Figure 1 (cartoon, rainbow, N blue to C red):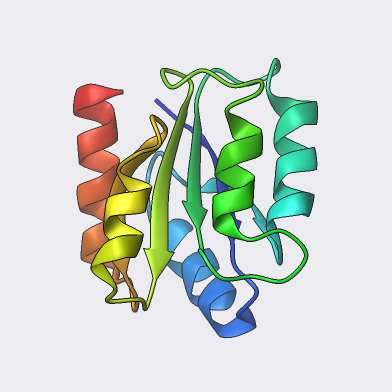
Figure 2 (figure 1 turned 30 degrees about the vertical axis):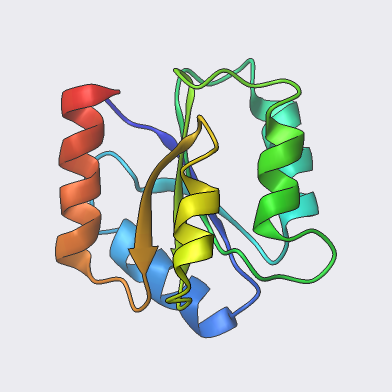
Length: 130
């Protein structure tokens, strides 16, 4: 099942690499890219009713609206059976991992850099469980 996928990160290199890798997947290749959580959130609000399932690859530390603020706002309108979030960060702080686990949308915590084989694992797990 194809998912509408959002890549949200203020690092242009990360976004470029995700664009290339997501294009090589079967079900994650329909994607939009955003430099901050606010732009991604506004897009998601507009598209929420027109797509069945969403996958969000979300950085934690960004300007304007960080990943935590994005997740807090997501709680106000979205359902966990429709949106899966994968936190993508270079943080090794256990408090970030524990905080991420508190959100019903967060499916996993992915350490940067993210490789194609990891995206394929994510894709498979989504198809098996989402």
